[in-house]
Length: 187
Image (cartoon, rainbow, N blue to C red; front, side):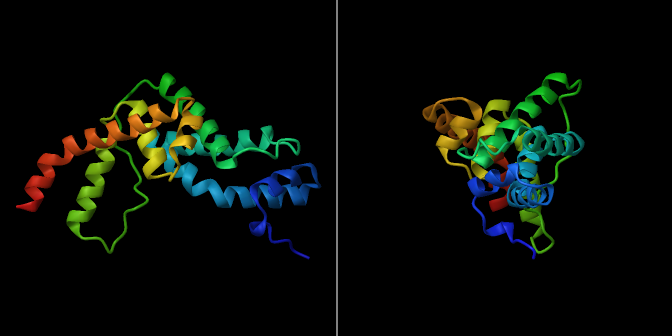
């Protein structure tokens, strides 16, 4: 009989990590399916290089799998995965020789959008590259990851006020960069 792990809560799935191999595999797959889009999007947006993002993405789930145990059922799985991805991403950035990259995948891009919409999304994605790392990270966690300010604060090890401030400043910087383009577009 096949078990539908999608109906389990995160805590219930983590509790299954002490069971037999098939159960652990099913529980891990359910967590992966649930959180991989958010983690991949985070890695892509924050790192800006798809190859590095893919490496960090994969390593995040490997570290999660190896560090997760049945005893750690009372934690925020998405926050924990984002924290692992963040730390791995910081290591990549520290070791990176080049800082300029325009190799982005935009998950919001689709064929039904107008040329102007596609151009604007591309411009926003490239604008993220101009933000300071702290502001970019907070903005991506909020706007692409859908995290609350308290979750951003926990993930980045900062206060809630600081998380709000970083998101606000990132938005202001993006607006100031995009303002000339938007004026041109409206004419």
